[in-house]
Length: 57
Image (cartoon, rainbow, N blue to C red):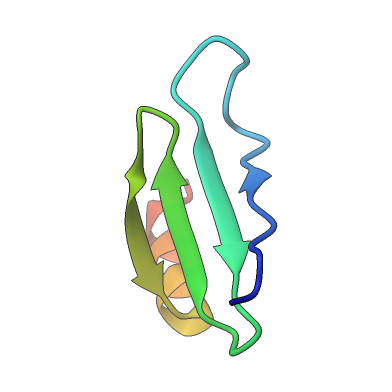
């Protein structure tokens, strides 16, 4: 199995809960939070892009 390269969100503060993102070789996007790293959300680039577009002011 391929080792994932988890990257911390630039919006996460040093002392707060952090959001991490990783991509698989197939292009799937994985998201997790530092408080519960065993819980991983799986999505695709289009779905994540649509969510970010809706949430951005």
